[in-house]
Amino acid sequence: MTDPAFWRGKKVFLTGHTGFKGAWASLLLRHLGASVYGYALPPTHQSALFVTARIADDIKHRVADIRDLAALRAAMAEAEPDIVIHMAAQALVRPSYEEPVETFATNVMGTVHVLEAARPLACVQVILNVTSDKCYENNGTGTAFREGDRLGGDDPYSNSKACAELVTHSYRHSFFNQKGAARVASARAGNVFGGGDFARDRLVPDAMQAFLAGEALRIRNPNSVRPWQHALDPVLGYLELVERLAGDERFSGGWNFGPDAASEVPVGTVVDRLIALWGDGARWTADAGPHPHEAAYLRLDCGKARNELGWTPRLDLAQGLRLTVDWYKALRDGRDLRKFSLDQVDQVVGATQAA
Image (cartoon, rainbow, N blue to C red):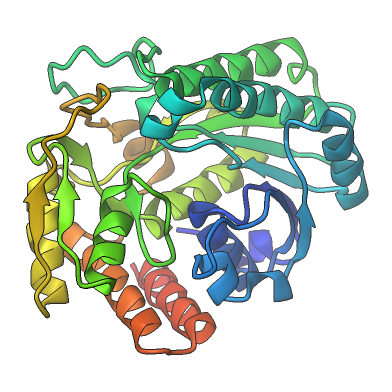
C-alpha cells in the first residue's frame, strides 16, 4: 500500500513522462504529493493521456532525448531529485524490427545515460529502472518467469530490455555499491492497458481506435497468452518498491509486477470482452498477413513482490478493461479527460488505501 506521507514533497525525476505508462505515473505521483520533473520526447498523439489530462500543468515538463547524455545530465542536476524513475523507452516489439538501431540506442544506452547522470548526485536516494516482462529468454513452454530466470530475447525490443537489465545490474554493483550511494532496482511488467494509449501494434489501443472509427479490429495472433493488467496496478507496485528500497537496500535487484493468473488469458478473450463492453457494432477480423515472430506464451511469477513487498493487483481483468473502455468513451463523448483520469486514479488509489 502506497504511503502518501513518504511521497509528499519528494522530488522525482521521471523519464518517459509523456508516454502512456509514464503519464499515469505522473498523475499518481502528483496525487500523492510528489514534485515531478519529467524528461521525455514530445507526446506522439494529440489524444494521448499526457495531452488530454493536461499533465504538463502539474509538473516540470522538459522535452529532450535520453540519448543526449549532456542534456540529461544538465536536467537531472537541475532537478536535484530524491528519486529517479526511468520509464523512457522504445516500447514496442514490431517497430523494433523496423528500427533496431533506435531501439538499442534508446533502451540500452538510454539506460546507461540515466544511471550515469544520477551517479554523481548525492541527493539521489533511489533509482528504479522500468524494463519489461519480455526481458526473459522465452522458450515457449508457458512457464511463469521468476526474477532469477535467464535473461534474453530474440527480437530487438526484448533483447534490448534484457540488455537494460544487465546494464542496471552492472551499475548497481560497480558504482552504487558504496555506503550512502543510491539504491537501484528494476521492475518488470508488460501488456499493460488503460485510457490514453495510442501506440500502434498494441492490442487494446488498436481495438479502441478501430471501434472509435467504426472499423473492425484486425487480430494477428488470437491464441497468444499474455499477462494483462491496467497500467495503474504495476505503477503502484513500482512506487511501493521505491518506498521499501529507500529504507532497506535488501529490496534492490529485479522485481516482477504482473496480474493474477486469472488475467493471463489469450488475445481473443480480451478482444471478446472489449467488444462486449464497447457494443455499438464493435467487431474483429483475422489479419492473415506475414508478421514478425512474437512469443506465443508469456507469464510472470510475482510471488516475490507479493511475499516480500505485500503488493497485490487491485484490479482484475474485468475491472481494468471497464476503466479503459470508459476512458475512450469519455474521449468520444467530449468529456473533461483531466477530471475523468484523476477520478480513475482516485478510484484505484482509494481502493488501495482501504484494502
